[in-house]
Image 1 (spheres, rainbow, N blue to C red):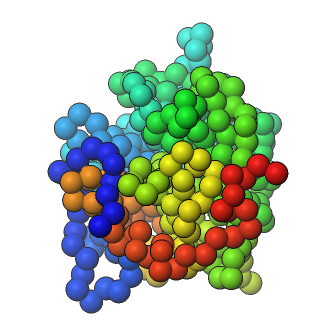
Image 2 (image 1 turned 180 degrees about the vertical axis):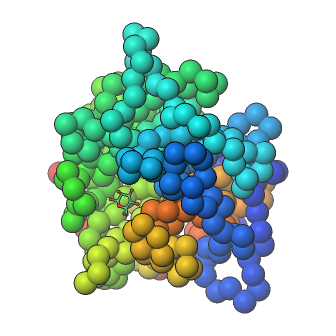
Amino acid sequence: MSRILGENLPNIPWQEKPSDFKGPIWRYAENPVIGRNPVEGVARIFNSAVVPYEDGYVGVFRGETINGRPHIYFGKSKDGIHWDFDKEKIPFYDEDGKPYQPLYAYDPRLVKVEDYYYIIWCGDFGGAAIGMAKTKDFKNFTRLENPFLPFNRNGVLFPRKVNGKYMLLSRPSDSGHTPFGDVFLSQSPDMKYWGEHRIVMQKGGSGWWQSVKIGCGPAPIEIDEGWLIFYHGVTGTCNGFVYSMSAAILDRDCPSKVLYRAGSLMLTPEEWYEERGFVPNVVFPCAALTDAATGRIAIYYGAADTYVGLAFTTVDETVKFIKEHNELVGLDGTEGRL
Ligand code: BMA
């Protein structure tokens, strides 16, 4: 039995695995949980992140506005399934109190570290780069310094310091629809200055589903064996990229070292809302809720750059799958410092 080291979440959204379903991750039967035109002025919400908050849930959502640009919207929910969104974009303020609204912002992640909730997104910094903000109350949002130079995407914070340092995963990229990409780790004493960079995971392996690029999704989940991460892997076809998801376990004290990694995918576009939309054939995980008492995991993923889907697994099913399909690639098993 594998164990989640974290809090209990008795009201985690949940459905049992259908008896005839064979895979390690199963979809919520009522998917998608967020459909088209969810808010006035917003055509699509996808690639979004949620956390438990007070007696329910809150989230930061990638809202593709009707002029085609993405921005971040705040939403809340009692059950993690039915969501109410603010009509206005999240109003950010710089640390000196000046209002700040990103030119565009997409693929937000949301991670509680100590007393703050951190929002990490991809925005413009003379090209695609990682933006960051923090909030305590989801009313006041303080924009922080950009952690990295462009070009970079898929910033994901660890939920606690490791060896006295904050840890941020990212995926250096180019300014377009990047045809390459590995996951790196950067460390910081203060959430401002990031360094001691390491290579964590590289694309490739004997399978083809993650042959073009990979990128992290939900915040790492602490389990008895280390850090469980779900991530997306991309393959190329004559009709463009296909995004699937799988998982790996990183070393608890040296998270740039991969202990186990699934060489096969755990979820891939199969349902109409994953195969049909603005960008067909995309499942893109950005958040996971966990319940330590039962080992349940609820994953929120973007579907076809159009919808939000919800899927379920358990820590046991996932760890078993990773180990049965274990395959490290390149520098995965090392500390990642050349
Ligand atoms: C990536 C990101 C994601 C998107 C995916 C598929 O490069 O831009 O936001 O879901 O492409 O279009």
